[in-house]
Length: 308
Image 1: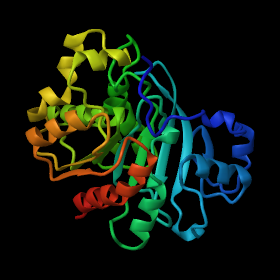
Image 2: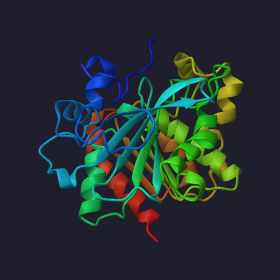
Image 3: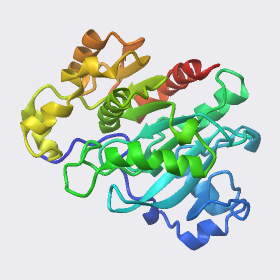
């Protein structure tokens, strides 16, 4: 049985007639001083619009209210390959010292497709309207192995813990040393976000907030083994968030899932065990329609924990 599809499944951006050259010629690129920049979604040029559409941030929204999205290519030693690094900022906000929420994508996803449910526009509108304080989302390519080292030499969790802070610090983002202050994840990324929160707590650097959307929490090895993401049941059990709820510490957590989602059983178990600050089980499935309904609540939850 092939992996279950998620709302972030779809053709790679490169197949949508976007090239490095066309993106580099988009308006607004010249002012960027980062390394490997391939585009900005604030441009009015065709490539800029195409990138915004790919990120779910296109439409008639005035420029002053649009999120500023930047896509770069960086080298990850932990993963042994180049990866995309996507930053999503509110409009008219300086990047220096801006708090960062790490955003983890789902199965068959990527950094480019991590902001589900129009998340970029929701962030921009919420900040402009004063609903939340300014903060940024940052996403990076994590592969399909549930954000852990299933393949030797490809360790996305080590990338998040040891490399992402440096990348953010180089760009002026984040807290001390570029450390993200919160994490959010969708589907497989929800599983990864729970593991990341656990690791941060174990390191004595707990998150200020954790948001998981339709987390890929399975209740049996029979189901998880179909993803081919763990060598064996013991490897899965060692990371399974349902077995290690206590390792999260006291991080304020929000959980959102649809009542028709295939992961609702495992998520309900997590809610009963963790008693998160927000436990939302509402009508919907594991799809973009559901994500669009709940992203405003997710942004409000994260923003409320980042004030002060």
